[in-house]
Amino acid sequence: MTAATVVVLLTLLLGIQPVTADLYLPALPTLQRDLGTSIAAAQLTQSALMISFGLGQLVCGPLSDRFGRRPVLLIGLALYTAASLAGAASHSITALIAWRILQGAAMAAAVTCARSIVRDLHEPQTGARVMSKALTGLGVIAVLSPIVGGLVLGAFGWHATLLTLAVFSAVTLGFVALRFEETVPRRDRDATRPAAIVRTWIEVCSDPTFRAWALLSGCTFRCRRLLRRHGLRGAVGRGAVFSLAGGASTALLSLAGAHATVHPLTLCIGAFSVALAAVAWTLVQRHGEPSLRLPALVETQLA
Image (cartoon, rainbow, N blue to C red; front, top):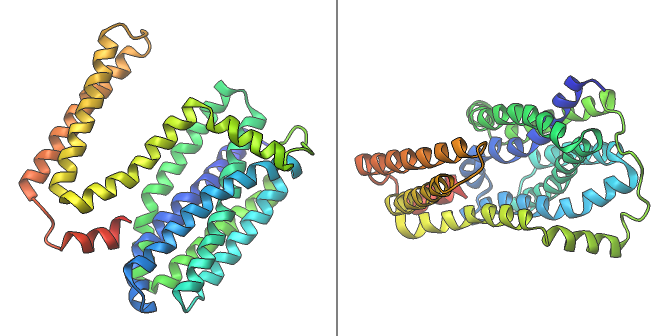
C-alpha cells in the first residue's frame, strides 16, 4: 500500500466515530418526537452506542491479533452498515437502541484496527507523523458531521441521517475490500485466550498514560453534571478557573526549568488558557443564560 492509501484508510476508519456520534446528534429531538419517547430514552441511543464502543475495543483488539486486521475490518464494517440500515427502518426506540449498540461494537472494530495498522507498519516516531495526517482528515470530518447531519435532517428527516451513516460505512467497506492489504506481521493464536486477554487488560490499566487519558475523558461527564447543576454561567465560570489554573501551572513549570523543546509550548498553553478563560467569562457576562430553559437545552443538545 502507498503512504497516501494508508492515510486515506486511517482517515475513513477513524472518521467513523465522529460521523456516528456527531452527524446523528441533531436528529435526537426529532426522533424523540416521531417515536413518541422521552428525552432520556432518546439520549440512551447515544449512551448505549458509546458504552458498546468502549467494551467492543476490549474484544476487537485480540480478535484482530488472532485473525488479522482485514477480516475484522470487513466483518465490522459490514455489521455497521447493516445496523445503520436497520436503525433507519426502526419504528420503536427499543429497536433503535439495539441497533445503535451493534453500531458501537462494529465501530470499535474500525477504530481499533486503524490504530493497530499504524503500529504494524511504522515505528512510533514515523507512526506519529502518519497518524497526524490522518487526524487532520478526522478533524475535517468531525467539523462537517454536525453540519451535514443538520442539513440531512432538515431535508429528509432523521431516518436519512442513519442512511447517511450506512453510506459512509459502505464507502469505507469498499475501500478496505479493494485497497487494503493485510498488515499484521504474525497472527497470534493465543491472543483470544481468556488468560491472555485478562493479562493484557491488566497491563493496559496499569499504564499511567492510559489512566491519565481515561480520567481526562471521564471529566466530560463531570462537565455535563456541572452544567445541569450550576447553569451555563456557573459551569463556564468554573471551567475558566480550571483552564486558568492548569495553564498557569504549566507555564510556571516551564519557567522553573522545563526542557528547551517543551518550554515554548508550555508558555503557549499558559497564554492560551488565560485567553480562553477571559473570552469565555466575557461572553457569559455579556449574553448570560440562554433564553430556553437550561435543563431542556442540556437534555436535547449536550447529552
